[in-house]
Image (cartoon, rainbow, N blue to C red):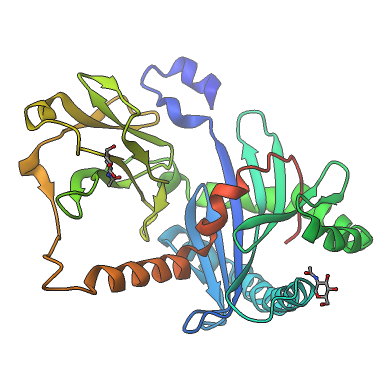
Length: 344
Ligand SMILES: *[C@@H]1O[C@H](CO)[C@@H](O)[C@H](O)[C@H]1NC(C)=O
Ligand SMILES: *[C@@H]1O[C@H](CO)[C@@H](O)[C@H](O)[C@H]1NC(C)=O
C-alpha cells in the first residue's frame, strides 16, 4: 500500500494501520432482567456481531458483515454454537469462583476479552486472551510461554489448574496463529470501505445543571482514533478538565466527551476558552467556543421531577451494559501489555 503511495500524490495517509479482532464475553449472576451471557465481536473497535442468552443465536451487525454471512452461512453457525457452548462454560466458571471466594449472593461478573491484532504493514500478529472478575483483571494467557498469569492471589488456584490443561493451551496457540488472523483479514477485506472511511462528528456543549461541568460532546466520528481537549487562549489546559472514554455508537461510529469545570471562570473570560476535536489522519479540527448561549441542557428543576435523573441514570447504565458489556472492564484490561495468545 505504501509503495503505491509514493507514486500517487493524492494518496491518503491513513492506509497503514493496526487492525484488531476482539471478542468480549460478559457472564453475570444476580442481575435480574439482564442476560446472564453476552458475547460481542468487534473489528477495529466496531461491533460487528452479537449474541446473548435471551436471543440464543449470533447476529451480524452492519451491512458488510451481513453480506459476508449471506455468502458463508456456516460462519454465523460457528458463532451461534460458540455462543451457546461458552454460555455453559462461563456459567460453570462463575459458579465455581463464587463458591471458592465464599460469595453466596450479590452481583458478580466474569468477563473475557480475547482476539488478535494485525499490523497490515509489517504483517505482525499479536494475540491476547484475558479474563476479568468483578471489574478487575483476573487471569491472562502468556502466549510466549503458554502459561497463565495470575495477578491476584484469588486466581492462583485457577492458574495452576489451567496450566495443566495442555490440549487447551495448544488449541489456544493454534487459534491465535491461524484462525484469528485469517478471520480478521477476511473481515478487513469485506469491511474495507466502511473501516477506512473518516467521518467528522457533530460537537455540542452540554450541561446537566447550572452548577455541573460543561461537557463538550462529539458524536458520530470514525475511526476511533481521536482526541479532544479544552484550551484557554489557544493553549491546552488540564486543570478542571475530565476526559471521558471513547464509546461506540450503535451505527459503528463513536462518541466521546471532555468536561470542563467552569465554576471558577469569570463570565468575561468564557470567550477565551474553546474545545478542540481532532480526528487522527484528518487535518481539520473542530473548534467549539465556550459560549453560554450555545450550551444545551435538559435540566429540569428538581422540585418538578425528583426521581427523573436517578431513573434515567440507572436505565442508561443497564442499557450500556446490555449492548457493550465489555467496556466495564476496559480501563483495567489495558494494564496487561502481554504479547499472548488465547482461545476461541
Ligand atoms: C471461605 O470459607 C472457608 C470456611 O469458612 C474458609 O476456610 C476460607 O478461607 C474462605 N475462603 C475465602 C477465600 O475467604
Ligand atoms: C468545580 O471546582 C470547584 C472548585 O475547585 C469545586 O468546588 C467543585 O466541586 C467542582 N465542580 C464539579 C462539578 O466537580
